Image (cartoon, rainbow, N blue to C red; front, side, top):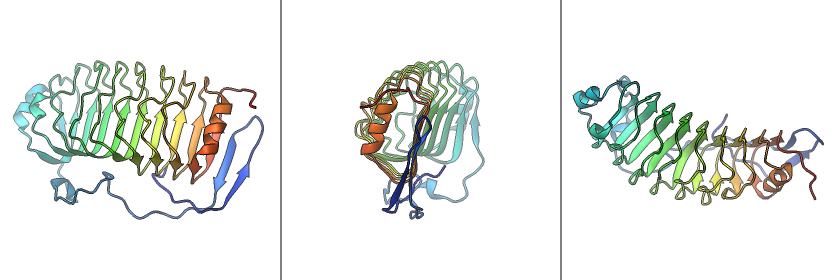
Amino acid sequence: MRDSTFALTCRSTFTALGAALVLTACPTEDPPPVSDTGTETGEPSCLDTESPGPDIVINTDAEIEELQLGECVPERIIITSTVTNLTGLSNLREVGILEIRFAPTLTTLLGLGNLERVDTLIITGNNAMPALIEFKQLASVGSITITGNSGLTDLGSFPALTSARRLEIAGNDDLTDYSGFEALTSLTGSLELWDAAIIENFVGLENLVSVGGDLRIEDNKVLTSFDGLGVTSIGGDLKVLTNEKLSECLVEDFAAVVDVGGATILSGNKVALCD
């Protein structure tokens, strides 16, 4: 899946009743390279190194205390296993890759609230964590992945984050909305919202207007509307697939008013008679 494309102006249309609706744009040109964080601070950082060290795997609270990490860590930090307390990481400001994964006893991310830049943030498989935190100073992020946290009900907030490269939120069974990303206005890469069990709309993403890569909305069990989704421009493909409660009429209406640079693929949504 590509993260961004720039479309040419000509376009052809193919429509098949009862099958996927596909609008295919002309061949695209590769865009110029973009910063992994999607932002340019102009300030030097340890993250700019081309040769970070080996992964730092943290399995226990004691290991956090032993490591005494500095403010900037270019390596991948993996927090997992029996970790329960992250307050020993409160001095962290910049991290290359931060993964919080499969930590069954971790209930909070308190201790990470001073982060300012993370090139890749992954939060996955943490089933005892009901809420993320307010990342008050986190203004520079490349990719954000929040997946498979079955007890998560609250995404916290990212008030300083206006642009990023990629955002994926999926498989968080107790999550009710996308609140927390109200400051986000653009992505240079993809937006992937899929496998939501109880989310009915896109509240929280009202100010996100530009997606440079693909927009994927797939397999959301009770999604019934596009309310809250501010996207008007998609550089890559638009994919709206197998959302069983989302009327295909609404899907087609949404596709008609969004500028799509790639293909538009609409399939498996709720069958309905459209006006």
